[in-house]
Length: 195
Image 1 (cartoon, rainbow, N blue to C red):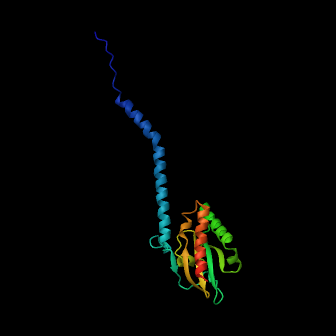
Image 2: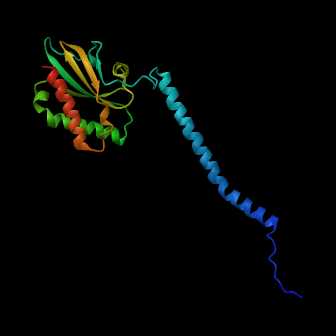
Image 3: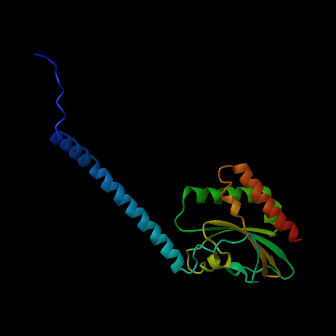
């Protein structure tokens, strides 16, 4: 008699039970994952629908750098006749993230530290505007805003002559000195052209 011990093949029933246990363990995770994906997709749909419903849309709404203005005076501010001014705007929303507040802080610091004389004599103005407040909605159209933005505006004889969205502020957010140099150089160019 040969005494060979043969391993019994695993019972198909046992494999099915282990498979069911694995499926049962992963089911809540799978359901939660699907629910999260549905929530994210719904949120994105809501944001896009809201943008397009407001008439702004995403395609074609980004400004193309420096723009020649339509001679409207933003915010009803008029410069004296024959006088040129540059307005540095920070456009924000009511809800603000940490990055948005940092952009405002860095821009304010760059302007106040770089141009104290221009601010003092009124050649340069600093304004923070909440575009969600009544009466400020036109800024979104006027400057084709799609997020919180720093915009420089030149006024000549009480009329807006040009403007520029400083789009690089978002890219330079992680480097305060590069951010300040960028903002100051752009303001310096606007001030030089305003003389």
